[in-house]
Length: 600
Image 1 (cartoon, rainbow, N blue to C red):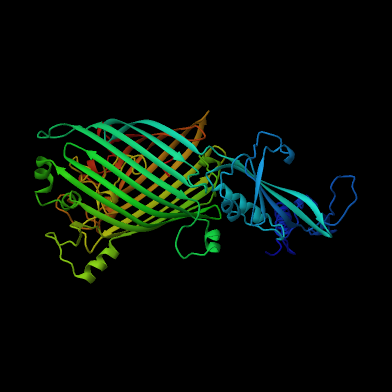
Image 2 (image 1 turned 120 degrees about the vertical axis):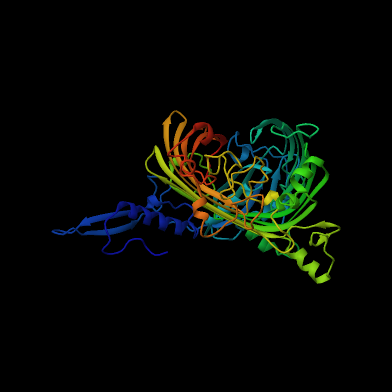
């Protein structure tokens, strides 16, 4: 990087300080362990009868103490590297006070521990980003901190250097001091649920082991149960109870697991590998549905601001052993609702995908977005059924009565889905900020599918969408809905919001917001009149809402209360009903939302 100072530039003390830091960073990357920017200074001399300044940069010699004699700055090399795995941060920082009673040597690295070594030696050495004999580089040290910080078996990492002289060379003995985390834990949660106005309760218990195979592998198993009373059911159902049971388990490895991949590549990418299994049992008056899934995915970070995730494979199986005769007659056998017919059959979903997330604030979590300018970008892509479809065509297997290829009698879904989301916060002053957000998504069924599986479709309305509507109560298009969530789903979604946020008093914040958006279907369905996306009319079907919000910022999380009013309602054509902002009706146009966290 070239100097920030040049002849003819405006005299700016901020630029002068940035140049000091640039030089310091350069030297810290080239072995000068004890260097800091205070060793760099300037002399500024104004030129008579002009507005020019002669600037001289000074490099001061090193002094250990103020009264010591000056000497040249030393360039340091890494000497010995030692691991201490049972360091207690509450005790004295002196090495002599560390409580250890045993040690081993692994590939030339001394490893000191107390009673039992809880991590495999290879895990320790693989997360180092420097080696004995290397020139000291501050970036390598920070990358080592980051690598050890990914290990859930550790609570703290402290890297300490002690100066030593070997012949004429200044060297540093390194001590990587690790503090063990609590490896096993049990958590119990109780929650209230509200599904479109239907109240219920749920409870879950989970067990976690953060060091299953002594390599900082995280194992989790969770059991969940829920009960809800369903309102609005027509006569003909045996009861109105909804019961759900579920179990999920996952194991996360802090490295990239894949055959035939070199160790150097695994070390560079610093990815985590996760395998997961899930099973869910839903007993409703209308049907009995079970869902099972298995997944294999990778996650990794880049420069602390970028997160990547690859879903290598995700297999989901939907099984419906029972459907109520009344539900089948009212919704499935009528032959008008392709979505109902498709989603209430046994179905196999085999998909893969990729997601990208950039956050300008980096790895730090900032709940109070008023405090800084920031922006984030999200992108997701997902594809399902393509490999299975190619194999089906190649083997020329027979289709079922619905014209679908099936595996062991179970038809599989085929679609592509892409999403993009952008959010930005603009700081006005220490009490006020302006935030805006735009998001869009498209899911296209093709080949072996007539529609998108219900779990992959889009919904609009709710606390994180157009807040003048209740959750899943908007769209598609100008369709007003008939009281069924299955009718109000789509393949295309647009969302946009702008929000003015201001600190009020204590931990309370206020907000003024305007939301816009809707969902649409790709195909024209008889049960969703006005729901299909058309370029010459979709912009006329964009719903708009406005409202007020109150937020309680508790530092570690935020409680949000938003009240939204409909401003433009695409479900009506008459001017009076289409523009409720002119003729508002509180009972018809108001929606209240309670949520945790910001909407974007």
